[in-house]
Amino acid sequence: MSVRKQESRVCARKYRSAFTLVELLVVIAIIAILVLLLLPAINAAREAARRAQCQNNLKQLGIAVLNYESALMKLPLGVNCGEGSMWSAYILPYMEDESLKKLMTIGEDSRGNFQWAHPGPYRYPIAQRDTFTNIIAVETVISAYRCPSAAIPEHQYDVSSDSWHVMQRAPGSYVGIASGLLTNQNRPRCMTALDGVLFGHSKDEPAKTIRFKKIKDGASKTALIGEVWHDGNTVQSRGQTSEQAHGDRKDHWYIGSDDIDIYNDPSEALGSTGVGVNLQKRFNCTVQNSRGDECQALQLSISSYHPGMAQIVLCDGSVKVIEDSIDEKIWSAYGTRANQTIDFLNRSN
Image (cartoon, rainbow, N blue to C red; front, top):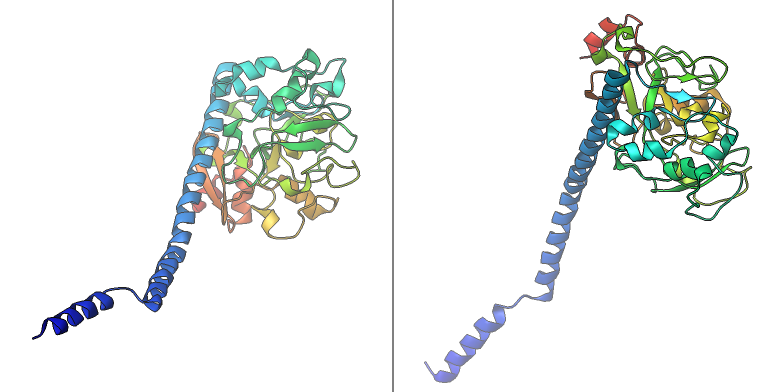
């Protein structure tokens, strides 16, 4: 064989060993398909991690409430409707955040709503004067009060229907469960003396709280705190107080609010198992500008950003997953403390 023929064969072998453009495109397409197949699994794993963190948040809140009850011989008040503070403020010392609790004024005084909001827009951050320490508190982000799956910003502009302002309020993801029977946040007006464990009280009557011995249905059968969906799309910037930046939007805050102070919106801090789970997924009522029963029920709904379910912490400190399809009677029973509904709950487990 001549040297020239050998060289030509070597060159041919070298040429055939390279990728053609078609082969390269096929490889890229295969890689793209594999990535697309893996993305749902990756997203599912991320959501599982976020859900686990949300569960841990609920467990922390539940343990803090239990420690509060152990120390003070009573459960915390759900909301103080005559002043504006709520259960999530009272348990701060048991969340290793006593300094924030000491910063606040709890109890109505001559300054009125200056405690929880400002009568007009102000430059953020607000000057740290005694008058506005509660506003500083409600603008403080507390990670344990936020579900990591929640599609909400760290801060939101908040203006109430009577023009009280919080420029950078921190949205919350959890509410106390005040009732298993309440179906509309307008009945009663401030959720006073209800059948749950964390309810409100009126400024016209003494504060009513309960002890664990009043939970006749059992601590492991009674809901304490649940997660909630927050309508964050309606309040992105300051606008006229007649638009959706006020009033009936589905918002949830922690520590305190002037809306609770004026009896407007106890659902900022409290919810009910008397309405279905994840109601926001069942009908279009995102911008809360309706006084209809559906929108008022939506305000109270235990709800979440997790697909097909929401989570609650029970009065024994355990966390339970509640599916959207839960039986209405069973779900209602979780919100009552002494309704003799244990048989319903035993059948659900």
